Image 1 (cartoon, rainbow, N blue to C red):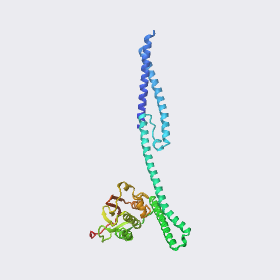
Image 2: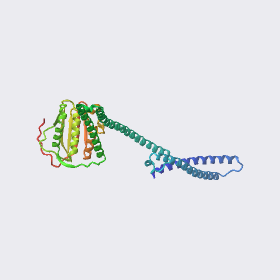
Image 3: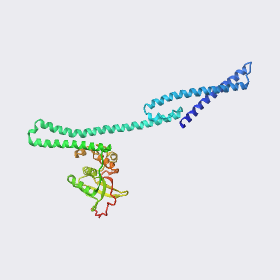
Image 4: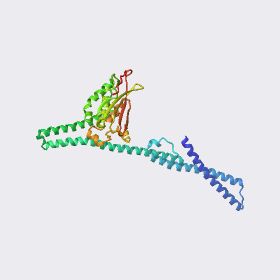
Amino acid sequence: MSNNTAPQRNSYRFAIRSSIYIAVILFLLLLSVSSFDDVELPLYLIFCFSLACFLICFTIIQFRVQRFIYRRIKRIYEDVSLLESSNFDDREIATDMRTLKDQVERFARNKKTEIETLQVRENYRKEFLGNISHELKTPLFTVQGYIDTLIDGAHKDKVIRKKYLERAQKGVERLTYIVKDMDMITRLEVGDMRLEKDDFDIVKLMKQVFDQFEMKAARKNISLVFDMNYNNKIMVHADKERIQQVVSNLIVNSVKYGKQNGTTEVAIEDLINNKVIVRVTDNGEGIKKEFIPRLFERFFRVDRTGSRREGGSGLGLAIVKHIVEAHGERIYVDSEIGIGSEFSFTLEKVSSSIEDIDVVVE
């Protein structure tokens, strides 16, 4: 109702003013004619005639203006509705120019926002396709090169044959790794992966991950340590295999971007609301602030050349984020250039599971 009241009021005002102008002109014209004519017309008759003209003009003008404006503005609505039916189909047509102007401007602003969003998505899509093409192309060309060399005659030399086959195998393993990660992240995004939650000791899990990557860290002389001695169990409720993958990816990233003779430190802290937070901190090169919002995108790399030399699918942090969020938890990043980075995530703890811990700061 409110949409029609203002337009009708404005069209009535236009019709009344126009009719008054016409009636006044006719009234003055009749007065002037009667004054020069031998037959003098009574004033009340002139007034009644002018009033009748006013009413007739008002009716005709109001009807014609409404029909004229309504038809043309309706056509504008129909044309605009072809672009976005949800914005105009269920809205009453406004014949007031100010109301129409506001609606069109609002529509234009919304369209501008949508176009900018689509442009951002298109740029992301192009970048994503370029990244995945590069990630798959590199190992494929590597495998193809070694196989072509073997076919051309290198297979006759047992030493070269074994070396090239081993390198080709590494390329195939990298392809398999990328495909598996892509499959996992796709299932996580569509909610197709079921989590098998259970109670387990997060401290023990951390120690197992430390043992797994001890040799990798030793190549850069990086120490994998806890922030203190955890002598008692800290039980959490989650999917153990997936959380191990989260921790492994964070430790691998910490070692990959950590500095020589550096440290990767893990802390497990008790939070309120039956939560614990796991922190993985390094004193490496750090991450620029503008890169932090994109860290969890597929194939996004802060250092494209260095990280590719280190290997990996480029999906590690994206998988980490999806696994943590699949548990209904949150992941956080804090980093300073030249100081280091800290990745932390929350987990549901088992009630009364965190016992008194003998703290011995290393």
